[in-house]
Length: 625
Ligand code: AGP
Image (tube, rainbow, N blue to C red; front, side):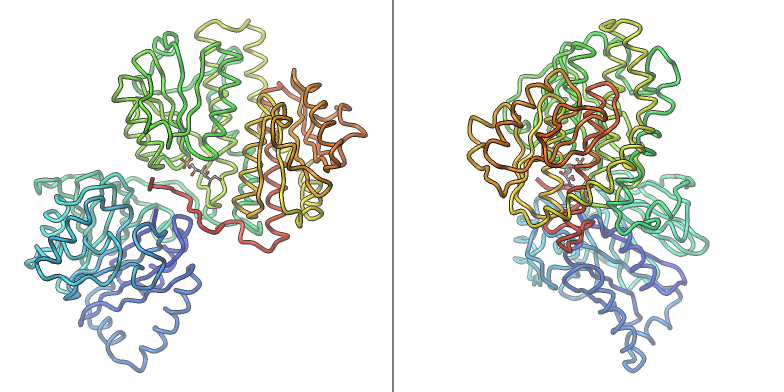
């Protein structure tokens, strides 16, 4: 849940570290810090708050060094510039400067930055304290510095390997010591760690964009491996110290993809990128007019897809909502029963699952702890597990029997937008493929669905263009409302849930989302003239039912904001605010309705002056329970 960066080379290390942290800030941003080697130890600067606070602290410190010999002179004397940095999302220990990384042992010999959780930290800490170590933070991460220091006898690589063997949990860390200038040593277990190789310099980070400004040559590190990085190159060794030969691969990501590209926020940019994200996800999979090709799904072959008797989807948050929509598509088109489960609940009951079940773990990051645990639980019980993720090389991919990728590109905004619509698109493709393999649809129905999927990116573009102004304007008008109720039915219900989540997470406005037919069983009591009710009322077999539900809302004086299908007159004279999305297949069309709801939430959050990209208390990658 944190971002780590390391650099060794001849550049000004603070600049490289700060630039890297900037690109990792989406992983955590409640405090941050850097440590730069000097001939007398390490200059450590940490601060609470987002990176602006650290930048200020680093700026002041750099200026101050002109007068204070230690930092500047010490660094200048070294053959290379070496440092580590960290941006934190608190798990163990409050958000304080003392808990911010980098951490060190009490002799300040070893500095570390850690991502993830050391699950046996309490046991290790007790041992270390009994042995005389003094801790200065409440974090689990600090034990890593003490553990490495405890076994360090002049060889940091060995010390990291030895300490690493005792660590349990899911983590990645990078260590350095002034005793071996120019050297960084990293290790990982179930958390990402990638190396960037440059000319006479090396980078290490939680994610590639952190060093994309400097190099495109990337080397991945596997669980249990230890990597030593020096300006002249890297050396990877395995659990027993054997050398592993791994050549860098060149990534073709454009740095632009990690920048806002002219929009006022990443979230707005990403809302606009949805057509492209879906086009990428759908493109080569819909080449045939009469069906879908999903490519390599590992051991999940056509035979298995024909024979499975049930699908269970496990996911969290927005990804869970994707699963809920997929249920309508898979059951309607492929006639396979689908259950959709919150991963955090699923993992702790004793689910009945077995070899005839296909379990789909949906996680855009591929690292969500609860989703991974639910996938493992199903796999252990004999089910086949498919991961649906946006991140190649993620834990979800590694642990599944097969992987279906969305191709949404990097999503920086914490609120999922383009990864959500890409997930739904990928799941629609899976549903069509299942229908094709199982013969549950007529040829014409199949080809109509494929054509609709091919056309979807165009409709998404059209929806953004047609609804942005109206949704933004409605948002500004209702920004002061203290509560919003969202309602929907059928495939529109998960969209209502997702719209409500977006408003909660970026605008901090209380919301509830309900199946419209359930209103009279309780939630209708919430309504009065001051309550906006957002209703997903796109074309479907239950549109008439929704109209009745909207009438019930109107009778209580509440204001109705309806998202409907272009040309629909069902809510004419009934809903105060109407936003139209293009017509297509009813289930696919429900997805289009999420766009004005994303924009509505965005507009309200902006109107309230909030940071939409980094909502409070949230992080992009949730690697804790
Ligand atoms: C989405 O807007 C949220 N930030 C959150 O609910 C997210 O969808 C959830 O944490 C699951 O993440 P994942 O897709 O990476 O597993």
